Every structure is written in structure tokens, then in C-alpha cells.
Length: 437
Ligand SMILES: Cc1cc2nc3c(=O)[nH]c(=O)nc-3n(C[C@H](O)[C@H](O)[C@H](O)COP(=O)(O)OP(=O)(O)OC[C@H]3O[C@@H](n4cnc5c(N)ncnc54)[C@H](O)[C@@H]3O)c2cc1C
Image (cartoon, rainbow, N blue to C red; front, side, top):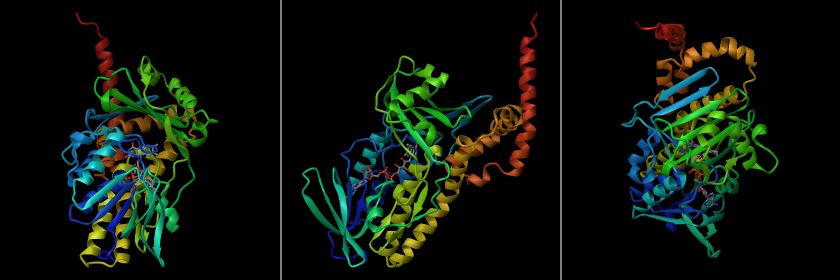
């Protein structure tokens, strides 16, 4: 099905992380690709805060994307700090895939760099400012797209396969009536974020999280061009106020003293963006003449900052599936089944872990006194443990599966080391208090 007399071998709808990296992977081996993006680039995507880890950068290395371009003037983040009542956790970004840092990238710059990277390959044509409005059908088979550029002139283009890399609200998924799977709506969250300039600097660039056990948390990240991205995520009901997102955002920032103190004297340099009731689901991977990738295929709460990785990783798998069909190794149906199984093996454990974290951190109704009394101490002993922190870091860069982070032996070790750590801190403080002669 991938060798026909159509205008293109593959048309990709959506030109951000999933679409651009898929186009590059196909372009590297000469597949004739048309990459279509509705927005004019560079521009910010609908809604996304900006954390990426070494796992994502390794995948970008494979397609020759230039780190100096996508992370231009962006500080390397070596730490993530969690500053919650009674618990301070400083998690060092572990060394993995040749890097020991993360970025809070400028998404407009990042997406544009990936789009330009795809254009380096002679068999890839990439048009921004082109909206796909419908699909072309031949009986039950998708055979191309209908759309228009800024001139609004309707154009029809044919391809052997049409890929929906068009995000959460995928037009392609809607037009083919793709079925959703594993949808979870139990703990809806919303997010609001904006970029600021002139915030007080920390000793080192980092991402700092603040939580108060009150249904929302804040994350402040050093980002490109001396900005910080300040993001609030919480139970949907808490973040959603009638109409005035900016007012609610500023109100929640003001209530978190260390964040507000850092921002005092600074200026908000973007509008407040965000998303209401973030979706958590998979969709079927494809059908006759079509497939889905990135958020169009699988979307989830961004609390763990894994969406871009999953988008770029599923793009890699889908490219492999297409190339296996092209080589005559698999039928399209078998290739889709392989793609789906491989994508789920990589993403599903993280999906479950993310949903669990949302429930545990934003929807936990543990009474304050219980937290103060015991849970917090045990929790602190575990979360402040060096081995646990290393394993959590390795999970974020996808080197340890979520279920293997805090195993029973790791927990026992942490609970033994925790009281000793407290004791030695206390002794240290006492010794410092002894007056020297
Ligand atoms: C609030 C929020 C915060 C997030 N924070 C993080 C984070 O810190 N780290 C992280 O890794 N992930 C984060 N994510 C997730 C991340 O943004 C997504 O997983 C990632 O952008 C998915 O990439 P994609 O290419 O699949 O889709 P998108 O980035 O959504 O790109 C889809 C593109 O398709 C285009 N398009 C749509 N319809 C059409 C059409 N009809 N014709 C042509 N083009 C079309 C759109 O214009 C868009 O540019 C966050 C998400 C949200 C909502």
C-alpha cells in the first residue's frame, strides 16, 4: 500500500514534535512526505509547559536535530527541587544517554527547530500555515486530505497513508471516528502557566515544585532567554474560575509565598495559557490508509512531563512500522498491530504511574494531622533518600520502569537510613551549638 501513484507516500497532519520527527525519520530513507502544520511557525503550541529530558534528546540526536538550535540560550537544569511543608527534596538529574541535565525549552523555538530539521531531507516537503479540514476517501480507505493555506483556496492532495500527528483534538482521529481506549476521567486536572522575566535568580538554574496538600501545586522552571515558566496544576474545580484565568492564576501564585517572592519585581511576558480538564486516553492506532501518533494516539496529564518524549518515541515506532511495510516485511494491518503493542509497552506503565501521581498528590484527602504525624515522616524518609531520588530521576529519563522505582528492598533501606539521617542532622546542629573555646 505504500507504493502507489499518489502525490505523496505519506501525508502527516501536524508539524510539532510527533509530526516533524516522524517526517525526518521517513525523509532520512527517501520516503516522499508532505508535512502540514496549521499554525505559522515559530509559535507556541495550544498548551504545553516545557520540560524535556535526556531521553527525548537522545531520540532527537538520531534524526540530527541540533541541540544548539532547539535549546538556544536555554539553561541546563541539573536539579529538580520539591519544597513542600516538612519535606525538601533535591533531585539531581541523573546521567543518562550522555547528558545529565534537562531543559525547560521555549516550545515555539523547539517546535520550529524540529520542523526545519525535517525540511533538510530532500524527499520531505513541509508547509506551515496549512489547515487540513477533511480527508479524501476511496471506499473505506483514506486516500488523502482536503485543506487550505492562508489564501483559503481549497486543495486536495493524495497519499498512500495519512498520519494524524495533530494533537489532543486530532482532526484525523475525528474524521476516521477513531475509538478511544483506556480513557480515565476520574481525577480531572487543569493547568495554567505563563512565562516571566526579571524573576529572582536561584543559585543554579533548576525546576522547583511547591505543594501544600490543598489540591494544586506550582512549578517554576528556568527557561530560555532569562525567562522562568511558572505553571500551576490542580484539581480542575480549583483552577477553573468563571472566565478570568489570569486572575485565578495570579491569585494562586500570590498564595505561594516563595514563588511570589521570587517573582516580585518581575513581569509576566506571555498571556496565561493552559488547558481545562486534560484528557487521559489512548486511541486506536490506525486503519485503512491512516494512523495516529503523538498526543493524537496517546495523551495524558503532564504532571510528569513525559508527553514530548512519548510523542517523539511513538513517531520513531510508527516510522519503523511504515518502513517494515515498505520493505515487504509486514502487511499494513500487522505493522499497525506491532506499532500499537510496542507503543503501549513503552508508554502504558508510565501512564498508570502518572495517573497514580495525580490521584496521590492532587486528589489525596489525607487529613493534615496524619500527614504531620506519621505519613510525612515516613514519606520524607523515603523521598529524601539518595537511592530513591536517583531511581526517581532514572524513571523520568525512562531508564527505570515506574513500578521498579520504590521496590520493597529500596523502601526498607530508605526507612532504615531515614532516622539515622535525621539523627546525624540533629547531632550536627547540636555540635554547631557548642561554643568553641
Ligand atoms: C498544559 C500542558 C503542559 C504540558 N507540559 C509538558 C511538559 O512539560 N513536558 C512534556 O514533555 N510534555 C508536556 N505536555 C505534553 C506535550 O505538550 C504533548 O505531549 C506534545 O506537544 C505532543 O506533541 P504532538 O506533536 O503529538 O502534538 P502537538 O504538540 O499538540 O502538535 C499538534 C499540531 O497539529 C496541528 N494541527 C492540529 N490540527 C490540524 C489540522 N487540522 N491541520 C493541520 N495541522 C493541525 C496543531 O496546530 C499542532 O501544532 C504538556 C501538555 C499540556 C496540555
